[in-house]
Image (cartoon, rainbow, N blue to C red):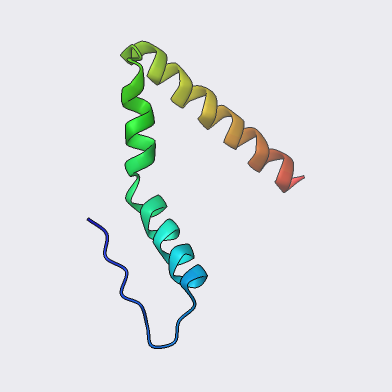
Length: 64
């Protein structure tokens, strides 16, 4: 469970923003979304390779 202590005189909007940032860092939402539907290991590996190729292509374009 995430606990966000409110600082003295802190705006609730700012505390909510800190909570959202902390929640995103834990990866809880991403894990829940990945469990919604089963993906075969071969499909997962293919997605990883495609993402690596995309990132490499971006880095190659940046170097030019």
